[in-house]
Amino acid sequence: MIISQSNLHGLTTGYSAAFNKALSEVSPDYKDIATVTSSSTAANDYAWLGQIPGMKEWIGDREVQHISEYGYTIKNKSFERTIGINRDAIEDDQYGIYTPMFSMMGQEAGEHYNDLVFEMLTKGFTEKCYDEKTFFAADHVSGDKTFSNTSTAALSTESFLAARQAMMSITGDKNKPLKLVPDLLVVSPKNEMVAKKILEASLIDGTTNITQNLAKIKVATELSGDNEDAWFLLCTKKFLKPIILQIRKKIKFDMLTKDTDLNVFLQKEYLYGCDCRDNAGFGFWQMAYGSTGKTSGLG
Image (cartoon, rainbow, N blue to C red; front, side, top):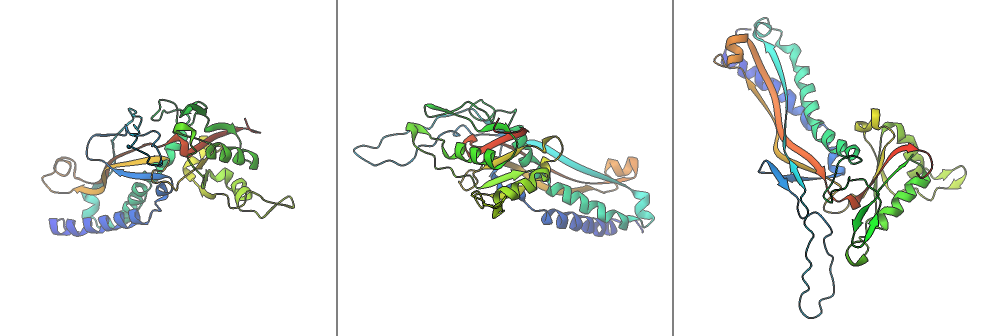
C-alpha cells in the first residue's frame, strides 16, 4: 500500500468503524445496578447522600426537614488503551489483519463501565460509603437504630430470605419504613444454579418453592475468581440505585498517524487508542445487602 494521508484516512475510518461497532454491541449490564451521573469537574461531591425525609401531613406551617450532609466524593480517573502499528506493516499491505484487534479493543472498552460498577460490589466489604462505614457493614445507623446489610453466609434459601427480610425491615428518620423491596440477586457463575433453584424452581425436593420469582437473577462474570462465593441482593427500582457510575468524558477513539507526529517520525509507528474519564462509587447502603459467601448457615 502506498502511504498517503488519503489512504491512511480510509484505513483509520475502517479501524474506527470496527472499534465503534464492537463498542456499541456490548451489553450495558451496569445499568441494572448503577445510576449514571454526568461530571464536569475533577470530582463530584455527593454530600446530600443520607436519609431523605418522606412526605408528611401539612398541618400549620411547613416543617423544614434538614437532610443530613456527608462528605462523600467520587474523584474521576483516567483510563486508556493504545495500539501501535509499524508503518512497514501498512506499506506491506498487512493492514487488514489488524481489524479484529480494533474490534477487540472496542469490546474491551465497552466492558469498562461493567467492570467499574460490578467491582464496586466486591469493594463494598472493605471500602467506605457516605456514612464512613464500609458499604456492607453490620453497624449502619439509620434514624435512631442500627442495621446490618452484610453476612458471610453461603447462598441458600435461608440466607436469601434473611437478607430480604433485613433490607425490607430498614427504617429511616422517626422509625418510618423505607419501603425497600429487593428485586435483583447478583451472583457469580459458580452460584448461578443455586440462584436459579432459589428463585426459578417451582418445586424444591417435592415442596412448593416459596421464594420463586421473589427477585430476578443477574449472573456477573466479573465476580469470578477470588469473589466467586460472594452474592448480593439489591433494590434497583428507586431513582438512585445502589452504585453510582460517574462519567466525566465518554470513551473516545483517536489516533496519531501524521508524518509530523513524533511517534511516526522517530519510530515509524502509527498509534491508535481510546480513553475516557470516569469512576464509580457507592449510593445508599440501604439498597444493597452483600455476603462474602464464605460460611455455611446464616453466619
